Image (cartoon, rainbow, N blue to C red; front, side, top):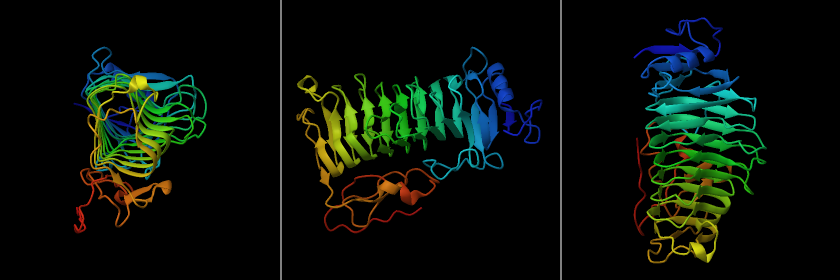
Length: 374
């Protein structure tokens, strides 16, 4: 394995073998696409202009991935960071690959990649990043689209399988944006991730067009829907997530099997657990539902969900369980009808942990306060 170094300040012609003689963006792409996989690229914080059409594909046709790791001041200084990205400034705290021309695009192909501490942003009708990978991992990676028009303004567009994402965020920040923040296919695991859409009349958070996935300890904010599952969205588990401010529905499913919604918080939603279409043709959807908390939700569970497996241990919050979700504080208030569950306590080194507690694990009557310490 060879270590290479990349800087937004590099002027070209560097060897890439030290922080003092780094590659520029084009040289990094050329090195990745021509060398064997397994190399490690250390990318310094700064703004990298996506000035063409790039598809990372290690070693031409082998598609064996490399490791691409961002750092702020010195290599490795961000490796303990996992957060929703809100406390990290693109370009200053993280390297950001920025697309400002709709004729340009940036993406990745292949398998066995590792991405850490990176940001991707688009200001135009083009995805911030096209994720075409298998068997790969992404940690502390953040995707943002600020464009308000067009049909390709995703934060991330993915056609992939068997990937693990931890501490990543997906944001469409323009209230006129009507497309999904993120589009993913099957067999992907999202852990402690954050999805946000500024458009609550036609935009959606996550479009999941494949099943066999897990969304655990994630936060979904805004959008007309938090998760929109299509008709192949089978065998998916929604565990310990918080859904906030989705006028139509938090989780919208199709009539498939193997679905579970357990220990989630639904706050200010039209429907919590919903069925696409809302007609008798979808009657028969069987979902395992247990220990979910609802506050200010018009309809907790769609009437078209089969009652053969009824919802168990529903928690109807008597008062707002979250401290200040409108300002991004999703921590549970003192005396709420639940206790903080999983995120962030199972995820080490989370920045601003007091703002991202989630969970709906009901306290038993007369139980003492549970204190969880590092």
